[in-house]
Amino acid sequence: MKQTFYILTLFFASFNLFGQTKYSGFIDKYSIELVIDNSSGGNVRAIYAYSDYDEPIEINGKIEQRKLTLYEKNSDRKNKAILTFEDFDAKNNQLKGIWTDLASNKQLKISLVKDFEIDYGENIEWTNREIIQSGSLRDRYFKVIISKAKDEFYAKVTGVKILEKKTDKLIQQIDSLQCQLLGLNSISVDDYNFDGIDDFSVFEQSYAGPNTSSLYFLCNAKTNTYFESGFSGVSLAFDSRKKRIYERNQCCAGTAVTTAEYKVINNKMILVKEKCFKWDEKRQKLTERKMRECQ
Image (cartoon, rainbow, N blue to C red):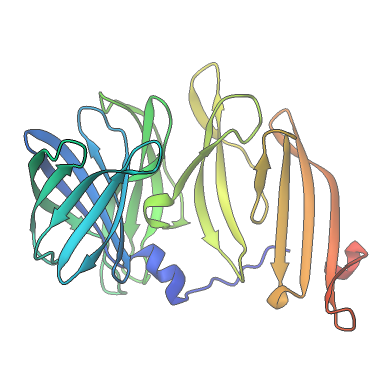
């Protein structure tokens, strides 16, 4: 029941390619990299990481009267620091600003140089641009490899690099992907096979309505590397307490919904049960039907 109609709405386009810019440089004497996603008008999402630690730090804010303000939060989700950039213009190749510690009011200068932008259009072609991701493991972080083919309007995630924090040592590289770019959140981390070890997934594609798919990579505990699981389904959700995977596939403007429950045995998804729901015009709600009515 997977819907293969690809939605090229402005909503998903904003996730894909509008406003993602990669910078590198310094906060005071400390080397950093910064990725800014200015895809939602005045609202801005970004990630920066100190080169000595490689711990992705999420910062969010907005642009008002050409002033970009980004807020860094602590573990309690309270503002910890502010990064401000006067006269911000994404077209400029240099970015100057101030990092301010809100507890001490200590200020450090920010000096950055633009490395690249994620641009789009059928006549544009480039390969192997890398963007750090918000999701990370205790001792590893991720970068997605992005390429743009000349005859395609949008860029795609074509690979993933798994790197060691603090050393930048390449642990593993996964290639030959063709995934929709979800900006700073193409990578998610979770325990997908319920073995107590964190795995990771790559956002694959959005489909009709709310349906999505991802590629799931499981950790081999012996080698500490990752392999593609073969897990397949629409909008999968993972319940670590019940050790179950739940699927929800919606189509036809929400008038038909199938759900499924799976368990995991030997790293394989095993179907436990599935249900079909169709819209009942008289009752004005979804009602359960026989599975063949949803197939």
